[in-house]
Length: 354
Image (cartoon, rainbow, N blue to C red; front, side):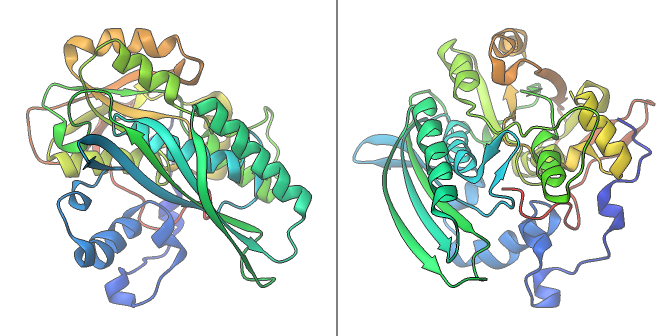
């Protein structure tokens, strides 16, 4: 990775906050700074409560004495089918993974379809087959849902909303607030494949080696950590906004300082080459099959051993540590030995990637 390479955010014009502009822009859905502003300034204040304020991928609830996690997500990816996956596969695995990030074993999923008039029934069937296959792989059942059809030109083919419920089987609160000084930061897999696979498919780009999305269930990797009894304080999958947004969000929410080594972050040669060609920073590219784990230092080595035994996390790496300092920032050590504060994207990099 070349730290001197200008990333894509430098190509975006200044984009004001929603309060300044009073209009929604595509960048507000990109997982970067604008998304954070939209949530913190417009959405969260209207619904503020202790669970929402936790800022995690899933809500941690107690229902009639049972500890559960609850999550919801919407999928608007374009194209609907891409190398390594489809909107259906993405919807199931994305929901499953959000539950896993809260330390819950996924159980049930809902599926709501918003279909645009004119979508081929054969295409819809392929996507639903992908959903069924993904649900079987992840050990969940799709138990309820809804279907709506909108006029031609108003739906971009198909949008999917899912919600999921999981049982919290593992002890402790797995959340940003549980991160502690001294924790080791482990990245479960190499980054950048999903966002670039979507871009290549959308724009008809070809590279020396084919790009495939990393869309996958994280169940084998996460259960390996918890079943071994390791002390895991926080998990977060690196989706919209990429690894950079995830690290910044976790540091801000926990109030801790993260020290991360750029050279330790796994990036495949094809992603590195594509980013250099296109002027992107892999840290800002979306993923759908990797997560960051904050693990107690005495368990970090065992965690790496276990993760490397799973196909979905075979390229895992220790990328940094949580410092005793508590300034809520991420400091990235570049390959040249210099240090810079890591920030979220300010604009949008790739629209409609999940």
